[in-house]
Image (tube, rainbow, N blue to C red):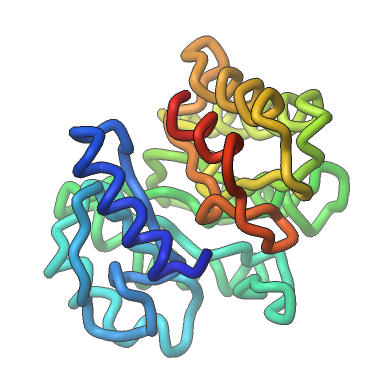
Length: 236
């Protein structure tokens, strides 16, 4: 499912369900992504993202001013290479980019969400390790939510729990109010029962996840989720 298709589906579903779907985003600062001026409409809260630096900065402030969002999100997987969809930023570049483009929005009352790193838990310069360095290096920065991305086997919910626990340590260490999983999907199509188990864990307030978003109802390998799995997702 493409970003445009996912937006259309979200608009249609939230109209029919009278607001049961809470929010969406699309790797850009416009509801219709293309590194362009904000276009498109949403029946669901849209959270702009500053995907990376370079061209994405050009209309960032203008789009945010037009959308008047509650939250904005930082860079997309700065710990991942561009050929795999990441913005590939050094920690130093991400810190400076944050201070130049994100931090000034705090004075307008907008809530700031960290860059979204991967769920790598052991490598020093990826995932949790990268996030730890970023938070330590961003002196004077403000964060209202910490977010990461999660891809894993649908049959192994323990890996999801381990990632949440690991990122919660950083959330608590830096006194960040909320924890998000802003992009997630099973690597392979789950069964309806597996999808329900994932969502039951995510929706349980005791587990401390304020928001989460599936990647356009796709698997991590780009296969569209269909049938009973989608029904399980929407009914959860």
